[in-house]
Length: 320
Image (cartoon, rainbow, N blue to C red; front, top):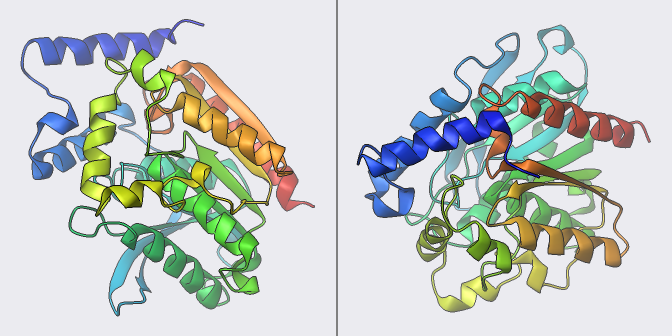
C-alpha cells in the first residue's frame, strides 16, 4: 500500500526543509537541539489535542531516592470511580521525548475508553543510561499500585502501554511480571505496544528499506542506542532487546506497527515470537503510515481510527 496522502504531503514538506537547510535529522543535531526539535514537532503533528479531561500532576518515587514527574489523565465525569488504568511510556529512543511531547497521545487515549492514563517521565539518556529507564518504569508501576486507592484507580486492572522505546519498557515490565521478577500485585492484565523497539543488536531489512525519508531514520536509531547503552553488551540484554530474551510477556498483547517504519520487521518478529510462545496477540499493521503515527492526530485522519481500534480491543480485555 502507498503512503497515506495526508502523511505523504507532510513528508514532502519535511524533505523540502532538509533540502533547503531549514531542518536536520535528530542525529545530526546537538542533544539539546534534538530534544527541542522533537518537542516542537508535537505542535505541528497535533496542534489542537482534546481538552475535556481532568489532568493531575504527580511525583513518583524511584529506588535511588529521586522522584520523577507524571501525569494522570481521566475523564472529568469519572473522578470518583476506581477506573482501570493504562501506564503509558512515551517514545523517543530513550533520549528525547517527554510528558509534553506525548500529551496529545495520552489525551486521545484517555478519551478513547473507560480507563485512566498515567504517564511517567522516566529519566533519559545519556544522562541516565541503561537500565535506568527500565528501573524507573518498574518503580512507576510499583508507585501506581501503591497509590491506586488514593487516585481512584483499580490496581487489579493495570495495562502497560507505550510507543517505540516506551513500548519496549511496557513489554519488558510485562515479561518481568510474568517471570516472577516483580511482585504478584504488579502483574498487568494487558499490554498495548505501538511500533516497539525489540532488538537493538542488529539491523533488519526494514532498517534499510526505510532508512531515510519517513521521519524516523536508521541513523537516528543508532544515535539513540549509542546514547542509551553503557557498553555493547547492553544491546544484548533482553531488557533492551526483548526479542533476545527468554522471559515472555504472557498477558494479552495488542501490537500496532507502521508499514513505513525502520522498526517494522523487528516489531513483526516480536509479535510472532510472543504468539509462538502462547501469548494472545492481536496484530494491527497500519500499512500506509510511518513511525510515530500516534502523534499525528492533527494531520492524518486515519489516526483517529487507530485509537478507536486499540481502545475497542482493550475494552474487551478489561471486561473479562
